[in-house]
Length: 335
Ligand code: KG4
Ligand code: ZN
Image 1 (tube, rainbow, N blue to C red):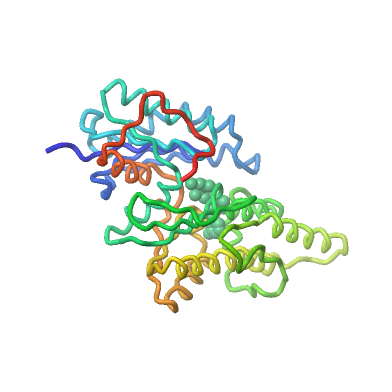
Image 2: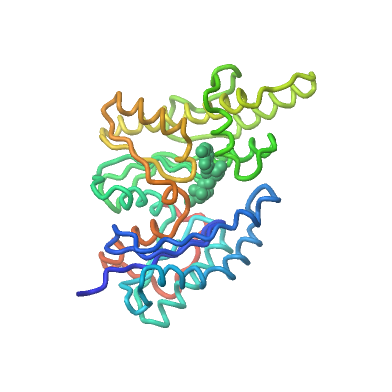
């Protein structure tokens, strides 16, 4: 029987990842080498450092994925690689490796949109998941509401005009001295605290499907600065809860309204911020009240990984799609 194994390669940001997925549904190996330790002291991803580290890691990571899957390159049906969006220098490392391997072994190659990968993580995690659905992708690099009428078809309803949701969490966490990335730390500090004690803005709530988080970030920074000037001590837990709630309020309101407008009964989450406990709790509760089936992937499939790229690529390869060896990185690739 023809092989159904696809090697997926993902290097769009600071994760060097490779995975082997069977028939677009079964993960045989999912190897992720995080570079977070390298970037931590800079408080964010340094593109030059990220690309150099990807160069060092990409072949060992691919080798390990094949080894864990008990497969060799010759067992593959094809190779899928993230083409964009992302950091150009980082994307190029994965693309060059994928092209070299595909050319050397005469394997079909396909480029995958990183956001399509995030959405497909849900099909990987939930084999019974059906379309139509609405997906809210929220990570350090992206905030997007996407309508998926059927597999492989996407209508972007809205993205962020400025900061991504995760980026907003990270920037405030940094100011609070919580380290990078700080979304999970804010989530932890906010647990059980009153989210309504500090008033913060909800930009663009109730209108359209675009997001904007830079105003919230400025308001939060000004609140901290004023307290410092006036010698007032800020309760960090209370502040974290208020800040988190301001982001979650907008995400929940728009996601639920999008699902209603598209008349879908399924809403899925993806991206690193999908790990946020308040976002999950509110979407599950308010979604259930509206009769929505709300789901998200396990954490290792929420954050950047190669399996989601392999899954998305499998269906494209099956449909006969092939990328030429001139395939190039597209840092601003649209869905
Ligand atoms: O998907 P991801 O690994 O990277 C990108 O593709 O950007 O997402 C990382 C982001 C970071 O901004 C991090 O602060 C955020 O996800 N994050 C969280 C939580 N866990 C991770 N944000 C809020 N609450 C969390 N529990
Ligand atoms: Zn991502």
